[in-house]
Amino acid sequence: MRARPDYATSPKCQTLFLAGEIIPYPSTIGIIHAVARKKSPEDLSAEELRWLLVEKRRVARQERLERYRRTGRALVIAPDLDNSLEQMHSGEVADDSAVEARPRSKSRRILDGFLLLVEISAVVGFLFVLFNGLRLIQDLNKEVASALDQPTLTPTPLIVAIVLPSGNMPPTTAGGARPNEAEIPEHLRPLVQSLANIPVPTPGPEQAIRIQVPAINVDAPVVQGDGWEQLKKGVAQHIPSTNPGKAGNMVLSAHNDIFGEIFRDLDRLKPGDEVVVFTNQRSYTYTVVQSQVVEPTKVEVMAATKEPTVTLISCYPYLVDDQRIVITARLQGES
Image 1 (cartoon, rainbow, N blue to C red):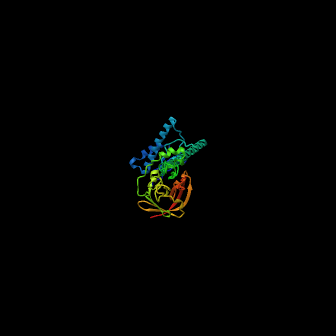
Image 2: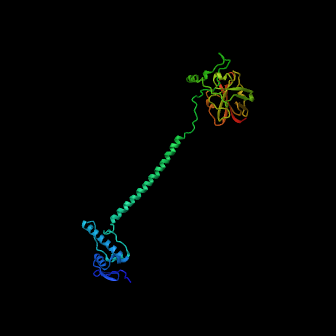
Image 3: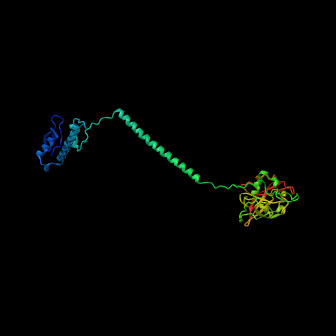
């Protein structure tokens, strides 16, 4: 039975039990030579070959350490024979490095901790900058989207009424009926003259073509534009007031003492009376809600409204024509 390799504890008399024989252990070189003298390589067991390989590595390692020591690249420490033999027995190969592992100094530990803190701070700072950058990009995208998504603009009329339409001199005055320029402020008369020929909209199926007011027996055609020539043809619709049935204010005007005296009896209308406006497609019924007498310059009555509205305007009083009568009616239904 082959004995397990062992070693003596005395540093002066260390022996190696190998293949049942006691071999002095003066050095690793002696072990290799002793084994080589006793047996040929073919007769060596696996355990013996492993020991030879370990010792060969130890020799090579010692030579490297010696070179490092001579060049000043390593500090050679006293070998721990007990630990070395135990490592050889367990098959472990010692580390090639012979540099003594020195414990880190306090200042080095402080420096390492500071560097670790700097690295952590850098990572946190990077994440903070990245997060804020993403938020900034989102805000910029929202601003760009809002800038590109413009609301639908409502065109503002460039032509603003200076006085209410249908103004005229009474037919009983010297020179007969004619436009009443005296009611227009003198500094605005050139503007009114420049607006005399406003383009008439192209006829369409939604435009008003006729108006009926049963309470005062009115049944007359509606024309586009409320200039002097249009008022000769019937009830004139102010441009660009809205079409029948639409949200907004449809402004209709006519004379009360000339050209058929269509709106002579507007002052007889009362709240609840009906005003019916026709298009080529349907009719719209409005109900009177207000009647008022105003100055010719009170153009606020022609302002746009949120609800479908019709406003009837005529000179007042009869054969005096220095004011206006204004009737306001709201849409009740269509047919």
